Length: 208
Image (tube, rainbow, N blue to C red):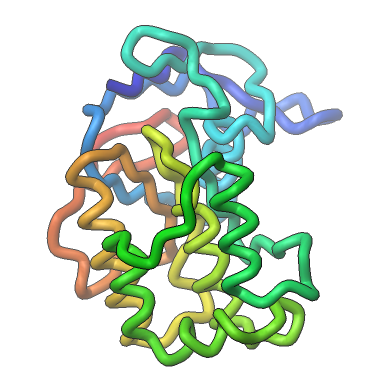
């Protein structure tokens, strides 16, 4: 169970709060689509949950305990890997190692991504030489190398074609069977079948 209590945030040197007294409770395993207008704070909220930004006030707990970095995996919009000279496979091996996990291609999400010609090409291509779509597939895979309780995906479908969007959708839906998954995007993918919507507005977070 994730509990957000009275969370408020303002950017430095700004008087007005971006959002104020957000409170929300969600179960331990479900897929949530976080929607809202541009500038409503969707990405900022994910950054706070991911430990990359500090809330002005409020509390976040998972199963009654303060949220910790090792419980979360965060994919940021157009995130760039710091190892451009490594191939996609070398990059994933490195992140599996950093996350103290064994590199395995029999994991369900790896099996799904391996159906993609773009992902297969990305595995043998240096990250810095990959197309934008290939990089995005590797970035998604990097986020999945961490065995987390809570997965945050900020616009994961950016730069992906329809087939790869469907594959990522399949991964997110499967992941949400045992984990809490939050996704932001400009629209809900047509292939997404099982999800709950939450709306972020100036008045807070609510079911949509």
